[in-house]
Length: 160
Image (cartoon, rainbow, N blue to C red; front, side):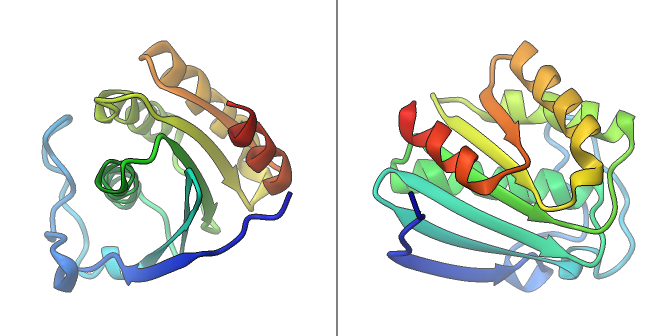
């Protein structure tokens, strides 16, 4: 089933949109960043019935960028009272194993209400570490799955 687009917003992740030049530090402490690091990524939200679709892309991924966009996705679901989130990511680089562990642990803590998450990475080379992240997040109470096929991710979310 195709994801029908009903409403879309696109915002770059930058200081001009309320993002500080330091990473979200509530969980793991401050991470110094290079200037304009958030400007390398953009996020677009689309809502379909009971699913929030978030497409995130940029020239370079990093732990601060990922922490920020996951926080924004979860906040957007709460703002719209949605319980299903589909995140599609398109970055050329992969986070390190430690960064994936840190990110997945943080995602589990960010989910203060029930949220079912499907994650699709357009770069298939990232699949092994993404599966590791799925395991870490699940061990911290998050409900979600990693997919390398967009249609399968949508079907899984619609069945949950």
